[in-house]
Image (cartoon, rainbow, N blue to C red; front, side, top):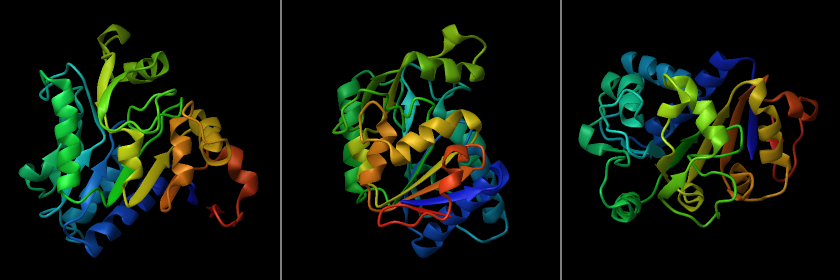
Length: 255
C-alpha cells in the first residue's frame, strides 16, 4: 500500500487526478470505477481541466459507478447519476453508452445487481477504481458488518452514513435508507485502487484502515489485502499517521 500525504485538499485532488490521467493516457480504453460524495469533486474538477487542455481523452473510456441510492430517480438532484453528470460526464467527451450506474428505480433488485456484475465482467473488469471512505470505514456503501465476499447488492445504510449524507438534503428524513452498491469482492477485483480522504474527521478511520486488523467492522481494512492500492490524504486526514512518515516496509510506504 502506497500512502501519499498532500498538504491540503487541493493538492490531494490534483495528485489523484494525475494518477487517473496517467491511467487514461496509458490505456485510452480504460474501465474506470468512479466514486461520488464531497471528496472526489476536486479530483473531477482537475480531470475536466486536463480534458479542456487537451491532455486526456474520455472518448473510449468505460465507467462504472460504485453505487446509487435506492428509490431515487436518476433525474433527482440528489441521485448519483445526476452528481456524475454535473461534476464530470457532461463536461468531457465520454460516450454516454459507456456510462454505467446502478438503476435506483429498478423493479427487480436481484436482477439489477446481477446484471451490473455481468456488465463489469463482460468488459474485462475495472482497471482503476477511485474510492472515498466514510467515517465508519465504508467504501462504496459497504457498511460495517457486511461480509467481504459480497458483490453488487442492496445495502441498508447505517445511521452514521445517513447522518453524514443529510447535509446534501433539506432534512435527514429525505435521505434514502437503502442503496445499491458494488460489494467488497467487486472492488477488490479492480486491478488498481486509488482511495482519497480529506479532513480531521477521517483521521481515526484512515489509521485503522491502514494499521488496524482486517475486519468487516471496518470494511476499508480489506484494502490491506489488495496488491495495488494508493491512498492519498490531506494533512488533516493523515494526522494520526504523520509520525510514521517515511515508513517503508514490505507492505506500506508513506510518502
